[in-house]
Length: 135
Image (cartoon, rainbow, N blue to C red; front, side):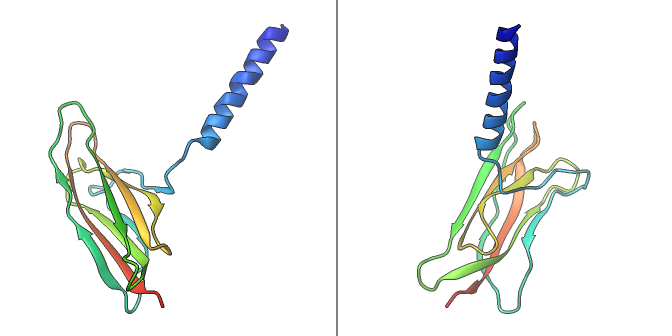
């Protein structure tokens, strides 16, 4: 009986520790039920500028999920702080992917987005990063 209790307690402890210690995305956007799976973080502000734009477009892989990481970091001079990030899904037929904010984002000078397709589908996103100059 003691062995059963001890092994159950150890197993529960390990499960909780793994759940707590494994890094999770800062913000995840569920693919949901919308036709398009857009992700928006922050708000446009007066005086912000387009700092970065990317249009990752990847073909499908049979029975696989396609992923792509978008990374942006503000140059040292002039230094910008991010105010708004958008990842606009160009598929509007329920077959688009998801965008996950993994690092940085609004209030930081860098951002990392992880784009993930649905199985047997490709990716087609337009990613824009806006920010204001930080004095």
